[in-house]
Length: 443
Image (cartoon, rainbow, N blue to C red):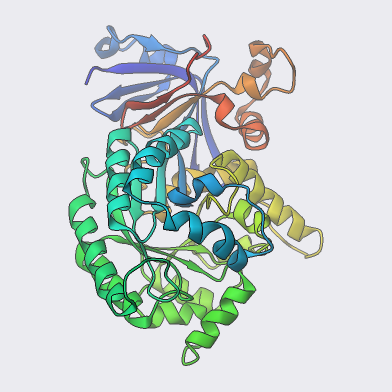
């Protein structure tokens, strides 16, 4: 691959709440990795980069690609369909939609979904499909073609499932199909694709299914993803199904589903003992505030989980969340804790820099890939997004020189509160453009 240079205001987050910024910076990419990052005046004059052709200008913004650690590909057409709560929403909108997610539907929807992710500046996502092996395979084919960094898995559920198999065949079939998919796709595309064994949640899975899924994940060193403590009715359902367990989280612990490659979506209503189980097992929490607001599930006490030492990333949770826009998820992360602070003392409200960290390097750390992606460090994969921040400015005809008065904190705040797909110029994964705006501005 030819050495390429990109010029712009480099901004990333080496730690929670910390911004690292280089105005008029330069990013040099070679063979899919970051070869150099620094001041344009310094980098561009190096002898080894004398023949590099530079793209963009000091007015562009260059950020690490955004990381979405919890979403549902087949549910995308149902985004923004309002319902009273999680369980009726699943029954009325989601299960009927997933039931129709056959290979043909996946062949059409999946490429559009991956394009939408990249259009939003997302370079890495963790996704559920449905119970069908064939459509999950089609989704993986589309993921491979897209060039995106994707972790994905076939939904597993053997109680209340929507498939047509006889009940006594669901468990063995789901396990066999999941193993076949993992063998085929885990580590494909030079590691950009990984598999996640995906028991939906304890309300729809037998103990045997969860235990066997955990064993398969360990066998292949794959991920596990499921849902935990999203909704009060869900928690009551799980308590009734597993009365022998001390808590919802204990159900997963007893099935060996917890671990450092286990991603647990939502985790809103957790007791102290449950948090301790997650910490001890080094499990990962996927915080999905736009979904929590949309479905009325509740507000996570984010600082409580952070203070316990849990790894936490952000998820759009489409279609519980109404959009794939991770800037909106960051904004809701802040606003959820701001809302708590109105009626609780000593609530730590995240800053825009905190939220950006959770959507970049923090998300990479949650997935165990912080050595590979999540920041603009030399030798990491070149997963980054070029932003036209002028499109966020609150004027009808934005003047680009207005950006010269803004520091990194100002720009990140502007993006968190006004960002979206309209600001994305180009998105790169491992140095390859996976999305380019149809008519990129001359920055």
